[in-house]
Picture (tube, rainbow, N blue to C red):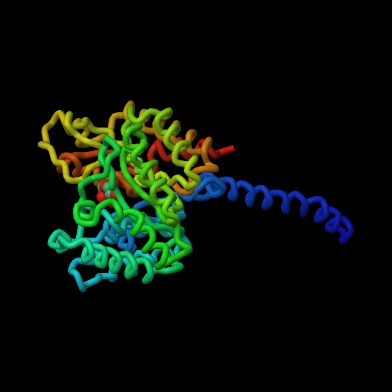
Length: 376
Ligand code: GLA
């Protein structure tokens, strides 16, 4: 072959070689986009997951790979609750919470703090405090110590969790009993003093029920009217296949957003098991008896239900996308079915399937249905 011919062949071949590699890169990019929730939704809202101690400690590499690939926000499932972080009046235990922060920073995540003031999983000695000034001082110390420790590192906080009854009145928590309703604006004020740049949220379940919604709106307006900073509301998404309806969820997202604050969907999971008749919302202190009828899928979820779960998640995310301008973050309450609190609540020892990854950490149809909404 003459030099001239070789040159000519090269001229012809190089563009197509370059093109093949271009195409590969493009395809890879596309594939990458459609194999990661956080990439797919990056211009819409943060995609979050609640993580437990073993996930924080990266004990299982597949778990870590999923969390870091699909999610760009984390919430601690338990370790930031007062009974763990502040077990005695003068003892704070930041061992696990420091690790949680390190995990979030390592993977460049939006870090959400959960939760400062909650009547449940509570530091046990607080019930002994009967004097309002003493209670206020204790709460102020609790909030300021924790928030200032992570100042500039925790992007948003659930300042108060679950302060409402189902009828929209204030729950008779130890804080309300001893301090009266002033504990609500004061808690937000103390958190804002400790870190003026972190976003402050009120978080609760059944936030789609009209009575509770009215109560939440009143609670938030009351904080706003006192000139105290509140940045958002967290709607815990402990939902079911049939309830709440898309219309109810939508009405609430719109109503909260009209208060001029961000809406986060926190604690999202879809229960697939029968509910005891007297069950009220997501109040964690309720327990019921186990029976075969109440645990219908101990070995495997039937395909028909798997499909229903995928459909349900799809319509929920269609709604979230419609209101992406109002929604700051969507956080799943866990990564895989095996870790979900819904296996043991409200009945102990059942097999539930509420999340996007199965017990072997394989993405479920529900995962695909959410991702497919952003495929084009
Ligand atoms: C409530 C709390 C969460 C968690 C769930 C159940 O929704 O806000 O911290 O305890 O219950 O896991």
